[in-house]
Every structure is written in structure tokens, then in C-alpha cells.
Image (cartoon, rainbow, N blue to C red; front, side, top):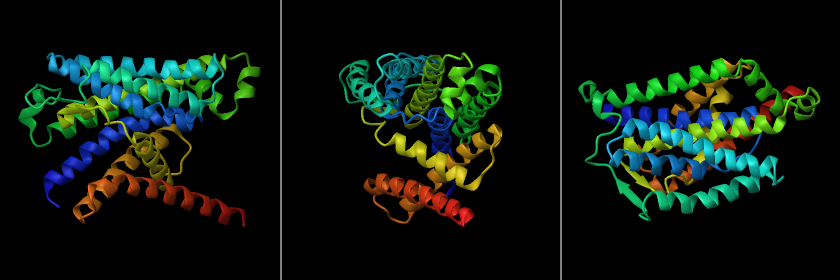
Amino acid sequence: MNMTIILGALELGGIFAILSLGLYISYKILNLPDLTVDGSFTLGCAVSAIFTVHSYPYLGIIVSFLAGCFAGLVTALLITKIKIMPLLAGILTMTGLYSINLRIMNDSPSISLFEESTIFSSLSFLQPYDKLILIGLIVFLIALFLHYFLRTQLGLALRACGDNEDMVRASSIDTDKMKILGLSLANGFVAMSGAVFTQHQTFADINSGTGMMVIGLASIIVGMTFIKKDKIIFQLLAVIIGAIFYRGILTVALQLGLPSGDLKLLSALLVVLAIASTQMKRRKKRC
């Protein structure tokens, strides 16, 4: 395995870490199964591609985050105001986003950015580490923000909402607002991940988000299998390490000759194995 392949795996691992940090908010903090992820990831890809084509790659990252927040807001409103089940609300938003994403991409299933300047172009003098450095910086800043935010009064209320919603409601905290905030932030980071992914791969595809929910879950579950600490800083670190480790496994599998079409199956198996190992350890402790 040469250096190019290793760097590529680390870069994609970093991009998936952004995705997983977003999913961490909905899956671990709020304890909500949000299936908006596949749609909001593609939304970030589409918005980023359009802004990059018009020579505004950095602005594309910011607007992608805001667009993802709006997607999360829609899902949260379906859950809190219309009282739709979280799973169904996510599916409805994800389904609607397919048409919206296609419209953003001017009804084209893919957009090429091969000859366009991206956020990585300004760091070309640092090749071959330019992409890894910038992605690593983005991951670090997001993790730093979450570490600080989740320890504020608002962040503690958000965490408490996921732990015991009835208790939080009894404390006169509006749990609906907490869900709206959490799902908006989660999908904002997921969309940002899609935005970085598009500029890294130099193309946007309408089906880019397929399976991203599994990737995010795999990263979180695998990471927390290795690092079992309750402190926020350790959990965030576990998510990042899990994403990189997950991508490393896929890279090794490809190098060993696994067909690319089987990667989704491998991802699903990793999640099953990680969950199964966690359940077995819990049973042993009880015995």
C-alpha cells in the first residue's frame, strides 16, 4: 500500500469524521434515529458544487452548512409540531430532498469540478499533504466547537433532553426547541461533510448520499467500542478515530481485491459486528 493510498484513506476518514460528528448529535446526544442524513449529505454536495462552479468554493462550504441546518429544521418540525415518528419524518425529508438536490444541480445527475478551483487549491504548495491538513483542521475546529458547546448551559440542556426528556420538560425546558437545535446542527455538519467531499472528489453526484447513514453509524459504534469514556472529549475523539479506522478497513478491503460494489455490504457487516460485540460484553458483565 503506497503513500497515496494511505493519504487518500486518511482524507476520506476525516471527511467521514465530519459526517459522524454531525450524526453523533442526533444519534448519541438526542437519541433520535434521523434518516435525513442521506439527503442532507447530497444537499451539501449539490450546493458546494454550484458555488464552486461559480468560483466561490469557501462560500459553498458555509452555505452548505446552512442548507443542511434547514433540512434538519424541516425534520425537527415534522417531529415536534406535526408529531410524525422520527424515522418517518427523516424518510419524508430525505425523499423530498432528492428532488430539491436535483433542482439545485440544474436537473443534472452529476456536476464535474475537475477544472475548477476548490478549497484545496490555495494549499497546493503543501502537496501531497494539502488536503489532509485542511480536512484535519476542519475536523479539529468542529470537534473543538462541539466540546465547548456541549458543556454550555444550552448544550447541557440538549444532552439532558436525549437522556431523560420527561425530566427536562418538568424543569421547564422546551424539549421541542432542543430537538430543533440538535437536528439542525447535526444535518448542518452532515451537509458540510458532503460539501468537503464534493470538492475533494471534484464531482457531485445525486446519489452521493446513499449509505451515509450506515457510514456514520459504523464510525460512531466502532470508535466507541475502542474508547469507552463518558466525557465529551473522549466521545468526540472516539467518533473521529472510528471514522478513520472505518475508512482504513474499507481501503484495505479494496486493496485485497474486494469489488467496490460490495463496500456497502461490508459497511453493514461492520455495524452488526460492532453492535454484537458490545451486546456480548454487556451480557458478560451482567453474569
